[in-house]
Each structure stands twice: as structure tokens, then as C-alpha cells.
Length: 239
Length: 303
Image (cartoon, rainbow over all chains, first blue to last red; front, top):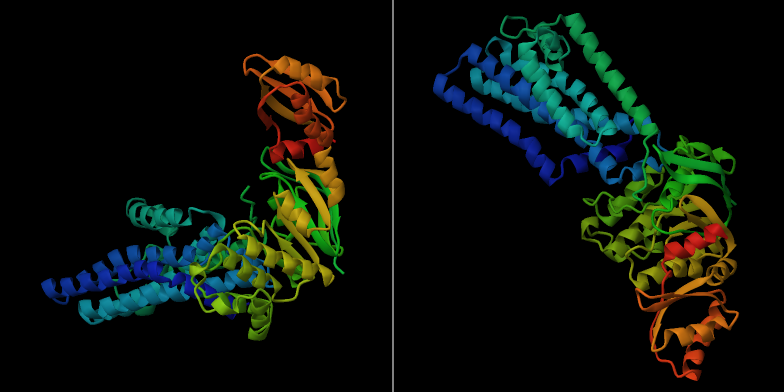
């Protein structure tokens, strides 16, 4: 199911100079913000939860998920170089699964690690806030990577759609319409984080069972569908 | 021995028919797929390579369908027309990756790089390669698993004459070894130099098939149209129409020229200057008015 050559090509493509810069920018920003907040207000649990919940989990994780998830396959389909993977006796679901693993790993590395560091800076993991949001970032990374990888296989405008989902749906609608919150990767991840740490500072609008089931369902369904999509991917001529 | 069979294949995109009921069999040796730009060559090659489903009909390789069948790639090597090819890798890394995806190792990659004579630049990034170098590395990636069928989409595009000759030699060798090699081109001379067998497609339809000499003759024997201006158009017209090589002449008053239709190309080209000299007429303009490849091809379709 996992092909090391496909993984190597995907890593090298994803961590190429320009994309690595974009991937690195938000985590650096998070750390800078955390340092500033800590410097101005001192260690405050509520402020720490606000920064990690409002910026790290609500904005940074989905955006990194979009860049890594769509970037793991989108550019190859776009420029046609995916033909070198497809013209091989390698099962298409293997290609998707491998790319998913890479996208998850990259999303986790660029979102969960800085989230943990930021949490430590903000309040030294008081009330387990750093750990809780790190767990949420790890869990969300999986679903985001799967979702945006699928998006990368079905549309050329995957980044745009991904950002619209991440920023408009999760961030904006999520705060205005309560129903939207049930269908939000962020809330599912928070449900898991809440369970791991307990406490009142990390809460979710959905229960653990609902959150966990939806997380797994979305990840599996998106991966399966992306595999099917790749099996019938049409490389139309340029005529 | 590998045979690719295209059986009543059509492919449309929405309302546009790109390939229209084509049937052909591609056997061992070098076959040229000839047609003007936009004729449907790439669409056909994509269907041959299993990257596009035929709307109707079937494409099979030794009886096995090419669509949704990853296992056929053990036998097929593909050189796509598009340029993009993991530009952040070196040539060697790229070919090694292609070998690994076939379950092969560095040795196979090295051999393929040697075959296309790219060892000298194998450690440079692909992004620094010229078009011809890219083409050769693509070729190496397609040859790495020793395929019995090689599909090349416009492989000579953008190559300089020397690179072109090298690639032609290589493809000829592949064909002589008993591989089935199919390449597409919109340039007749290219196809003529390399392919023993030609398939012509025009506007999505199979226009001609067979030996290149026959097709060449079909192309030369068609009626040719010329636009001629001279010091005495009417006298020239009268003299030319007397010869059977000319089937029609129109005096175009607006253009101030003659529009001549010649049926016997060889005879007409000898006749025109002779007649002009004999009658003391000066030829001011002689230009073929339908020499574009498209018109040559569309004549073939009608034939």
C-alpha cells in the first residue's frame, strides 16, 4: 500500500523551496505571536486557549492542510507529470495512500509541533492546554490532509476551494451558524482533544463519538474516492 | 511481438468529436501517426496508453484492454508530449525513480541513460535541460523496463537536427529489434524518414493507412491550385488550358491574377515556364494557394 519512491517524489515536490517557505511562514507567525502575547500579558490560560484555538487550530492547521494536501498531488496533475506515476504497474490506490501519508506527515510536522511550542511559550502547558491543542492539531491534520488530497485530484482550483472551506466555512460560518460547526473538522478534532485532556478550556460543539466517527468516515471516504478518481483520471491532450 | 488493436474507437468531449470511428492495428516496427495539429493524434495516443477511455470501441494490447489496467504498463513505455517532469530532480534521480516504480534498480536506470547518451548530464537538475535533453531523459524513463510497445507523442518537437537524427536512429533500432514503436508527428518529412508504415488522421478520422510511398503519391497527385500573375494573363490562360495537365482557369479581375487548377503536378510545373517563354509572357507571381498541410490532409480524407 505504501510506495517509497512515490513518497520520495512527493516529499521533494512538497518541500521544494517556495512551498516550504509558505509552509514555514504560518508556524513562525504563531511562535512570534505567542512570544509577544506572553511578553505583554504574561501566562494566562484563557489567552493561551484563545490564541491556540483561534489562530493555531482554526486558521493555521487548515491552511497548512490545504497546502500539503493539495500540493501532494495537485501540481503533478496540473502540469501532467503525474503521467510518470500513472504509466507504471503501481496500483492507483497505492499512489493515493502514499501521498496521503506524506501529506499527513507534513501537515502534522508544520502544524502540531509549532502548536505545542506555542502552547509551551504561552502558559507552559498549564491546564494541559498545549497538549490538548497539539492533539487536536494532530487529529485534524489527518482529516484535512485526506480531504484536501481528494480536492487536489478532482479540481484544478483545489487551493482556492480548500482555502474557502478552511477560512469561510470553518472560521466564518462556524462562528455564525451552529449547524456548520457539526460539519467542521476543527470541532471534531476539539472533541478528541477535550476527551484527552478534560478541563473546560478546550471544548467542542460535537460529542466525542460523533467527532471520532465523522473524522474516520471523512478520512476513509476521501481517500477511497481519491483512489477511484485517480484510476479514471483523464489526461486530455493539449490539442 | 506486441500488437496494439484499435477497434472502432471514437472519443468525444462534450459536443466535440476528437476521434471518430478509428480502426487500426499497430504491429512490430516503427509506425508513424501523421496528421495536422488538432487532428486527434494526442487523444488517440492517450487512449492507446490507457489514460483516456474511448467513448465507444476498444483499445487492446495483445487482447488486453489498456484502460483501467495498470499491469499493461509492464509492456508499455510512454513518452508524453508535455514538458513537465519533476524538474526539481536530476536526470539520474528521475530515471532511477521511474525504474523503481517498475520494481527495477539503479542498474536499469543507468543502462537507459546510456542508451539515450545522457550520462554526461545525468547529475544536472532537469530544470536546466534543453528541450532535446528533456526529450532524451523522457525516452530513458520510457525505456527503463525494456517495453515491447513504445508510444511517443510528437517526440521531435523542438529538437535540433542533430538530436532529431539521434532519436530517429534510436527509434529505428528499437523497431528493428522487434518492438512496436508508434510516434505521432504533424510533419510529413519526419514520418517519411523514420516510419515504414504510416497511419494518417485528419479531423479525428482515419484518412489513410499504409506504406509511405503510397501516401506520398496520394499527396502529390492531388489537384494543385496556383495563383499566377503575368504580363498577359489572358494569353497565358489560353495557352495553358490547351494542355491536359490544367483542368481549370479563372481570371480573377479583383486580384488581377489567374487562379489555375492543375491535375498533373509534375507536368504542370514543367509546362508553365515553357509556355510563358514560348509566348513571350513574363511571369510575375507563381504561388501555390493550397499548399498548407491542412489542405493536403483534407484532400486525403476526400480521396
